[in-house]
Structures are given as C-alpha cells and as structure tokens.
Image (cartoon, rainbow, N blue to C red):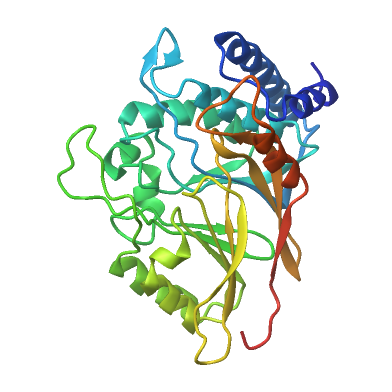
Length: 334
C-alpha cells in the first residue's frame, strides 16, 4: 500500500470502526506496512526532516499488559497510536519533533505500559524524529523512569519530568503537572487534577527572566487549574501561549490572566486524544512571525470506536476537519 492509498483509506475510515477484532487486525497490518515503508524511506533519505515542524499528541493511554500479544485493557489504543505513527511517517516532510502531552500509560502507570509505549514510538526515533514525553495524571514517575531513565538526567528540575524543546523560531517547555500522591500502591489511582510544584515555578521564573526567544509552555493539565503558573506567565513577555491535553478534545481559547494591568491574553490549545473523544493529532509549524497549529481530525468516538457511529459523532469530525489556530510570536510589550 503506497502513501496515497493509505491516506485515502484513512479518509474513508473517518468515524468508522476499529472496535471489531477483524477491523483491528486489518488496520494493524496497514499501519505496520506503512510504518516499515516510512522508516525505510527516511533511512534512504527520501523523507527530509523539517526543523520548524512538530507533531503534538496527547492521551495515548497504552496498556502494556498483553494477552496473546493484545492489550488486556483498551486493545484498540495501540492500533490507534500505530495509525498515527504511520501517518506521521508518511508525511513528505517529517517533523523534527513528536511531543506527547501526558497520559502515556493506560490507567495506573505500570512499567509494562511504558515499555510497550516505547516500542510503539520507536519507529519515530529510528526515522530521526525526536520524541518527548510529558507526565499526565495516569502516569507514574518511578515506573516511567525505569523505562526512560534519560529524563532524570536531562530535566532541569529534580524529581520532575521537565523538557525544553528548541525549534528554529520558538522554544517549547513541557512541564510536569502530575500531582502524584505519595506511597501509591500498585493499581491505586492518584489525583486527577494537576499542579506545578514550587520547584518548577522557581526554575521557570529564572528561565524566563532573561529569555528573549518566544516560549510556548505546555503540560498535561489545563492552565486554569494552576494559578501559580498563571502568575509566572503574567510576569513574562516571552510566553506566547499554552498547550495541554487531558480533556480529550480539540479546543482553542484565550485565557486572560492579568486583567487589572491591561489585558494579558494567553492563547491556549487543548489537544485531541488518540483513541476517544476527538481523535487525531496536531501539526505545529513555526515561522519567525507565528506558530500555526493544524488539527488533523480522524473522527470522534465515545467511549470506544463503533461500526456505525451516530450522526452527531460524524458531524463533530466534519466540523473539525480544517481547524487551525495561531500563536503570534512578535507582540511588543505583551
């Protein structure tokens, strides 16, 4: 199957089925073939990396407990992620980065979840794409670090997974909003809401103090849940916007966080998920003047794919087929 055939198949899929085992098996084979072709094309130099392009994912929720090679919980999630990976690798210009805005694990942040997620994302790395992961409320730091120990070395904040992604026109800072309760037992839930701890706030304030390049902040949770982060943003003219996941929907809005000192309007983007809610990913492209977020919609399913989705689901997907949002980079006296 060539790239054109694959993309036509994905368009036909739209809000269509992944639920049945037959459909899952079919799309697994399609994804595996396209991934292999994409990796091979990148190795032979037929796919170039665009340094000003990134793909943003969120809420991939991968279950690594396998029964006969199939996830015990949410078995369609790995298939959905494979399809997204296949689409990324089929792009004529590959993104320099793929950023995952948290909830990498399916529910309780088990080590096997991260091992399987690492396996599914490996082809992106092999194609020369840098993959950066953030923490969500379904993640757990200790199991995560057992699979991705490099984050403990590269994070500028001890005990938190903080990443700085440098692009030609903008820096993206992924913060750690996981409010992990202490002494969690295996398969024990933690706090759903998010927080940015004081150590991150102190580091971020220092990082932004003399930072002259535009900065996009991001974390798993919405900005409105973290008032201390809003305070830092209010002080910094470098911050041009905020990106998050958690809600499983595509949503573009403006957060006004400093109304008494002139309107400090912060554009925000909520990313889709890969398996329920709004399904898809977001393509980030930057120029010296602006950052454009393009939503690549793959349908709307709740709570899991269905063979004959209701018209309301189809309408949601159709409404989001050509969604874009821009963050302006050069705004004097923000």
